[in-house]
Amino acid sequence: MFGVSKKHIQDNNGFIMISSYVILLLLTGLVVAGSIRAYNTSKLTLRSQESLQAIYAAQSGIEKVKQELEILFSAHFYSPTGAWSISSFSWFDSLLSESPPYSFPVTGTLATGSYTVSIIDVQRIDNGDGRDVILQAQGTSGSTTKTIQAVIRYGLKASKVFDYTYFINNFGWFWGSSITANGDVRSNGDFSFRYNPKVNGNAYAAYNPSLGSGGNVLGTNRYDSWSTYLATAPSIARPGNPTAPSEDLNHNGILDTGEDTNGNGLLDTYEFEFGYDGTSSQYNAQEVVPMPYLGDLDYYKTVVTNAGGQIKQGGSVIVDAVLEGDIVLVGTPSNPIEINGPVVITGDVLIKGVVKGQGTIYAGRNVHILGNITYDDPPVWPKPDTNPEQTLQENQSKDFLGLAAKGNVVVGDYTDSSWNYVKNYIKPSFTGEYPVDDTDSTNGYVKYYKNGLPYFDGNYTNYDGGKKSDGTNRRYYESSLDNYSFSSLSEPYYQITRIDAFMYTNHAFTGRTGSLTINGGIVSRDEAIIFSGSITMNYDPRIKQFSDTFYLPKDLSEPEVVAWKEL
Image (cartoon, helix red, strand yellow):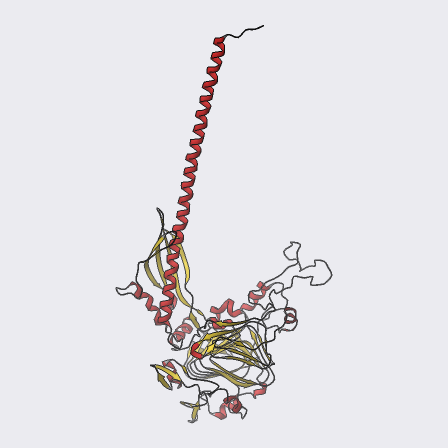
């Protein structure tokens, strides 16, 4: 039997105590290290959070200033009629003056921090039709400060009124079961439906006390189901949305070639943002959408000159950017009217026939549509469409005509006896007075002043103070040609059945037609189309995609951040 001495036992106890102490030290070190690491992590997290909050504070300051500048400049930019001048953009230059219309720096406090915004510079953009405002903002959160710099662009773009196949700056009205709009419709007043017209799109009415409008869509409209639209809508009408159905196209229960183009084992569904989805909604009490009132055409003269716009026919240039006076344009399949870019005609434009190319004609007075206007190569929107992006690109280069009148757009032969019926709808009480621009005095629209503003009395059947080519008095809806010459150029009203164009006028869109199809749209203040049979309007969705390409009348765009960086 082995014995254990007392001394040996004591030594072992001492070893155990020393080991326990070392372990305790190690554990304490680990706890302390963990605490330090947790503290550092927490500190880093706090700094990261403060950094983000400082950036957000600086960005909030930029947004505040951007919006306040937009509100102040809009009030300066538009006249009471909506007319504007390109020189108005010099307002931004004065932000750098000793007495600016808006004072910097701008400070503010948020729940998570604060900001200070200063202006660095104002730079003119192309053609002077806008400004880039360079802002610098410091944002602070806790002990962290961040600085960002943003370039805000205030400029022009094609007006939102061209988002609709029918836009009226007064009260809108669709009275007739044979009216069809394949696109959205909108008015800056109430919108009235009677006798169940069809709208394959949405209808909008604006709350507008100046017109006495409560902003109501009155009555109901029909609309096609999605499948019916695909089966019956014309090829030139906008596509359905989705453009191809998510179903077995061949109805054989299996995936066939073309039904699974991306190879994911599922049937394809193609979307097109501006297609028809088989529903129609009515929206009341909407905001007024400003019309891009054509005041002084000097801006557009500069635009067309810089763009090199032309009209050719038979290989000859007949309009090189700007033409002083009136013009008659008659195109045929073998000798079409060829338009390339925008042009300005300072007088009347009288037009009919075949058109090819892309561009917009600005008229200093009226546009008179003497007969059918047809594209040589129109856009085509298959229904359904299994490759909408390719279709969009193909249609981008297809023919497009814009017609913009500082006066009226008039369809048909106003010397015909049937025009007497039209006259009832282009004078009070069907129309009413409204403010105009001082530049409208050239065309006789400044009849009197109220509260310092020029007004037109709304009677388009009166004489405008001008003369026709034979020396007789001219009415607002008439051209400057004598009646005999005008009538000899005009087609009988019942033969006017198709207009391929997007048409804009400051004043009235009016006329006498047969069963009419408009491939594009109408934008006007007052509208009085007297048609026999039916009227169909097919929206051209290329407007929303390529508006700058077509040079339609412009309006003030929403401010856009074109550059951003952290300093």
